[in-house]
Image (tube, one colour):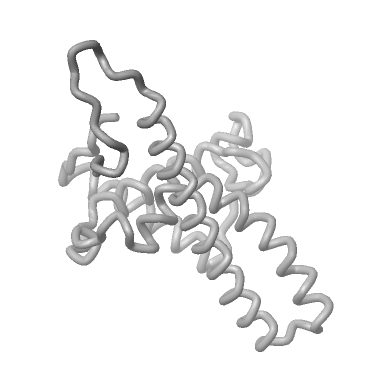
Length: 165
C-alpha cells in the first residue's frame, strides 16, 4: 500500500536492466543451459518458468513505467474508459484471455485475414469496455442497495433515499 518513491540510482539501474533486456531480445541472445555451475533458473530467460532474469526485468520495467510522469493521465476522471478498465483489471484481463483464444479461432478460420483480425480486435476492445462499464454499474447498484439496508442509529433523522446523493 505504500507509494513507490523515485530514486535516481534505482531508476537508472532499472532502465539499464530494461535496456539489456531489449538488446537480448533484439539480438536473440540466450545463454546455453548448463553454462554456469548454478541452477538454470538463475540465469536463463525461459518463458515456461519464472526465472530470475525475467523477474528482475519485469520488476525493472514496472519501476521505470511507474516513475515516468504522463501529465495526461493526471486528468483522467473515474468515468474515463481507461480508468474503468483499470478499476476492473482482473475481470478485464480474464475476459481478454478468453477473447484471445477466440481470436486465434477467428484468424485460423479466416486464413489470417488482416481485415477480420482488425475487426475482431475492435470488437474485443468494445466488449472489454462494455464489461468494465457493466461492472461499474453493478458495483454502484450494490452500493446503493447496501446503503438502503444500513440501519439508522437511534436519534438520527431518516433521510429519504431520493434525497441521498
